[in-house]
Image (tube, rainbow, N blue to C red; front, top):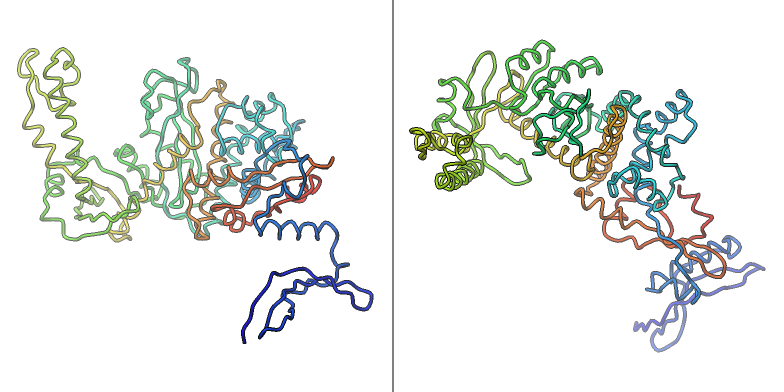
Length: 540
């Protein structure tokens, strides 16, 4: 047969007093004109006028049509709002049951303003475009689903978040375990600092060693526990001059007290390692995997670990998503195992770092007046009073450690490769801190009372939790998005409120890039491309 197909059309047929909708097409078969049914839509009476309009608009859109052409020349845009952040954050808050927790706090404290709406606004702004609480107040009309709150209510809500911080952490921990359906067996711990645009010290804020390089600024110390999925377990806030190694003791004691834990391996970087912390970990029946300061180990151990002949096996070390081959060996020392690892990439980095120091050393040798406090840091020795030269012995000694890293553990149940894999995941907590500091812009902080500071940290912790929840949920559905990619897609989830013919409608932005996946995989309620303003209540 020879078919020639013409354009499809809609036919309304009447049978037994009823009108039926069919999508038809005219065809030419062997030179003769005929028609055939593509799809039957049923009775006209089965559809409301609004449904028929929506079907028509959708068909028009699929054909590449512009809504403005349908709506007429008098159309005007009244405002544009974002709906993606509200939908996603609302989903995360309800998953963790934090909406109920906040409502309960409101009831128990007899709070007269809407604490939940204040939290929603701060979270939406924190994930979208972090800014001051004052700016949050001015931006609240830019989001779908938010009810108006006053500026003083936003500030006061931080006080109540401070009071509820422990309950919120417990709730997040319990739900997080259900989310990943796993037993808590490995805990990653580290600390960072958050600085203030101030030099005024008090009971909480103090000057100390800054991990942001903000010397001279007052700060607080923030200790964080997460699991291998970057799911938060809990946090603690310490005074700005509190030594990070001492936070380890406090964090472990509170971890064991707060959660029913049978067995756990604590993974931390070398800054946490000292005899007291190791002893504390053992006393709490925890096992540990900690970074060792290789150059500080006893000579016999150190000598063994830097001899290539002892490195007997090769292992793929996939820390940054790239294949890196690592050789390793192990030696017993003081009731624990010290594992030495070596990688060519790390060796290249160590060599490069040393060469950069040597370049600076040569520069300083030409300016001896600047060397009094810097000589030892740049392989320079003082042979006589203010007579400097390169310390060749020190340079040679440093070179022998290129590429080596030491890890200490007391666990006896895991293979060496499993121990290395756990330690490898320690970089995830570094990524978490980067999210806190960069994406969520937790610092610098502009709050001055202890409660406001603690409330701000609690809000940022909730924000991080929901951010991690969204990424983990999407990743589990094979949709892997970076922080910036997730934010970029949520930014594009917008509605335009338009007016035409005296009526107001919403037009949704096009579902491009990963937006359909985000909506589907997170189980969000999809918005139609065009609907009357009054229908928005169906999507909140």
